[in-house]
Length: 351
Image (cartoon, rainbow, N blue to C red; front, side, top):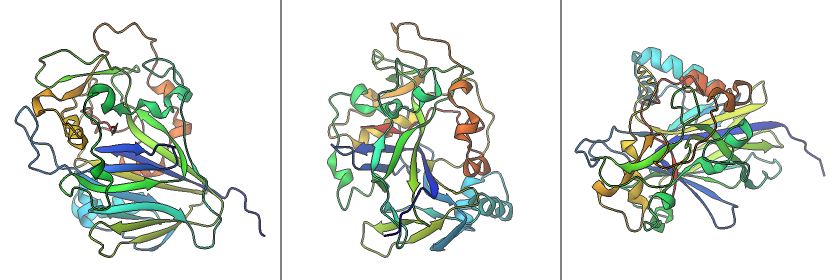
């Protein structure tokens, strides 16, 4: 039998309104992208900005359903550009890959035709020490995801979001991983130094939760592939026809995939202190026993009252550019340390 060695790396990057749900033995990770529509109100009476669930793949080549010039996706991602310029920018970002808008979609990653099996799933864990990372190795720990169970211990998870036909008003799409090494790609940038967040009601009443730590804004998964390609396979909740992309690596032996659930990406002046994470209220809707809107705690910059002192660590030092550089994110203007969009705290979460 022919032996295969490592041929290329697939890096999948996730950000936006989504929850990460590992199974009990760590062999499967379901990433659930939430519907955030124009009419969804939060406790201060304002409505959430519409979020669009997207999958964007940059690769050397793609067969199957591989659109690169969808004007709806292009003008959402490059909202400051005219349509033609936005399409050109999207095509340049994707190179030989493709882009999907996700609606009622289950996405899985499988091996290419005739290739060896993909490796199993594992998580970078047990390397952090404290409420902020002090090294790049600590930053990679999966545990920087904001944990709803710590903020609201009585909430629990409504398992229906993992059903074959999940609640349509809540679940926009799901991405199932059974392969790769899962890690924190980036934590929230709050000024020049690594800064934790704390959780409190949006109206400021009541006490802050004692749960406080730096929080992840991007989660990554690296898949070491022995073979020629990988496939992204979509099935639909309503059993309608799905799509497939079979992707081959670029000249650097890489494939990059970004899974986004964000508001329109229109550049804004970055602030030194991101605004309150109002969007976080939506996460409580995945709970079996969700609290009332006004009682939902949301992230604010800074440690919780009474927190012990912690080290002064620059944000750049735990996000080395040579390790985290992404051609795809750079083309989307979302690369680590470069994005002008992180003007509010809108992290992914874990139930």
